[in-house]
Length: 307
Image 1 (cartoon, rainbow, N blue to C red):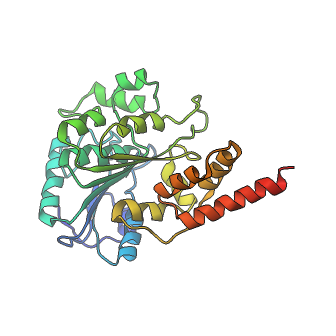
Image 2 (cartoon, rainbow, N blue to C red):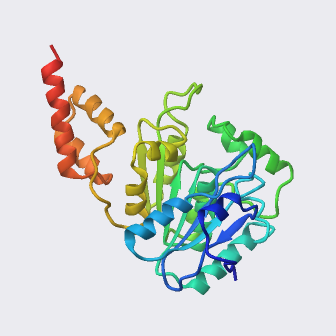
C-alpha cells in the first residue's frame, strides 16, 4: 500500500523531489488524487494541494490526499517511479490505496497532461468523480495529425518511438471499454491561444469527444484558453468550482465574474432570450439572484449609453 511518511505541508509539497506524495490517512474520508501537469524547464509541480486544503477548511472534514506527477512528461504512459513501471502497475498500486483507505468518495483531478492521467486512471479504476481541466482525449500522433492538433505531437512521437508495454491512446474508447461509472467533469476554455490560427480553441475538439460519454458534463469558458485553471484563479471562480464538483456543495454566492459579464453583454446585444441566459448561468453554478442583477446592469448600461 502507498503510505504517508508524514503529514504534508506547503513547504514539503513545493520542495520535494519525490514523484508522488501521500498526506496523512483518514480512513473512510473522501480521497482526492491529483495529477501534475507538464513542465519542460524543471520537474513538474504537484497540483491542487492548496485547493484541497481550502476544501478541507470549507467542509470541516479532512481529505485524504495523494499527489502525483510525471517527471518524464509522457502523459503518464510510462508509469511513475516508485509506483510502477507501466500504467497497469501504477493503477494496481492506486487501487490498493483506495481499497485500504475505503473512502466514501474517490475523486481524481488534473489539468492538461494531468487531466489525461486523471481520466486514464479514473477510467481504469472506475472512481466516483473525475475533474479534468483542458484534457486531451487522445495521445496518438495519427489522431493528432488527423484532427490538426499538433500542440503535443513531439511528445506523442517521443513516446511512440520507444513505446511502453501498455499504452492508452484514446480516452473515450478507454471509458467505453471499462464502464462509465465515473462522473466526468471536463472544464475547458474555448478561446484560441495566442498565435493559434484556429477560430476556436482546440480543447473544444476534445471536450466534444468526451461529451458523447453518458456521464460526462462539459463546462466551457468562452474567454479562457488552454490555461483554464489560471483563468479561473485570476477571475476568482476556482474555489466555487472545486466546491461544486468535488464536494458537491455550492459555495457562497459571488457576483458573476468577467467571463460571464462579457458573455451576457454579447448575447444581450445579439437579442438572445434573457431567461435562457439566466438558466444557462444557473445550470453552470451561478447564483440566480446575482445573475439577474448583473443582467439588469448590462441592460441598463446598454439602454442609457446606446445612443
